[in-house]
Length: 234
Image (cartoon, rainbow, N blue to C red; front, side):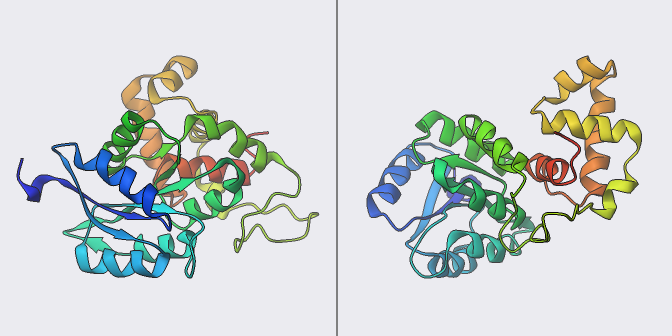
């Protein structure tokens, strides 16, 4: 496989051993290549501009610019007509920062102790334009979002506890689209949604596409966030 057809990856993490470990795993694959390594958010942005990768694996806490701020900058870039997609690397105690990173445009997140096979599969999934979320962290994220005092740092959710914010995009969804969105938030696949709502798989795919367009969500992860923030799921 030529270098031009490989998935080009930049790894941003302040721990050299972490970067070396991920690099070894990724470079063992014929369809992937680590093209750069960064130890903080500033370096990650600079390498993204210079090297035009397809994906950046981004740590959250790093010296200097953090991974959330860097993610917001990087996801605004485009390389060869494609966006640069970011996968957040995190630990259990950083859930709220992961949510903020998803709002900044990340395509999902993985735990740092993810199995190599899961890491590689996730990179390919995100490269194809889909979102990924660490299964073992999903429950914790949902629990966080259901807490009465939960808010995303720097987001519109920073308001008084008495206020209930509702996105105006919610009103644009049809009743069926709301039903589908709720099932997405519950973690169901398209096929599972089709089975539960007694509709065809192509119909579900059409609804999902319309939902993402109407609520201005990049992927299913952002759709889940939208559903919880707007109290569609309790």
